[in-house]
Length: 120
Image (cartoon, rainbow, N blue to C red):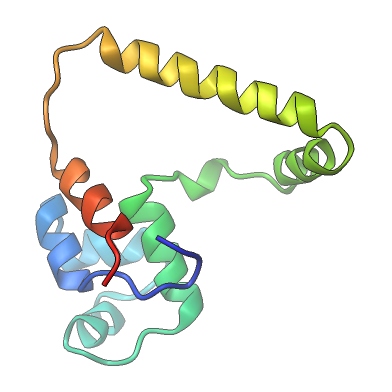
């Protein structure tokens, strides 16, 4: 999924995650009534759409994101691209190794991830 690309129907995402409107929408700072309007077809602003993608599709805990961490990442990308790529590969390898040690168990997130990367 590309940045600011329209996401799946938010109601569909919420139902697949097994969350009620209050649980789903408050995680991204939207009231239940506001979320209900988006689920009914009201146009969702780009920032809300992006938060929905990050929190509910990418499963990112935004409370853990610190500006300094992003600055370090940008610094590495700009000034030490080989180190940046090396760390990314090591992380990807570690994730693949830990996942390959477990028996495959499809989850509700696999379906969301697969659909979020499909082209319309």
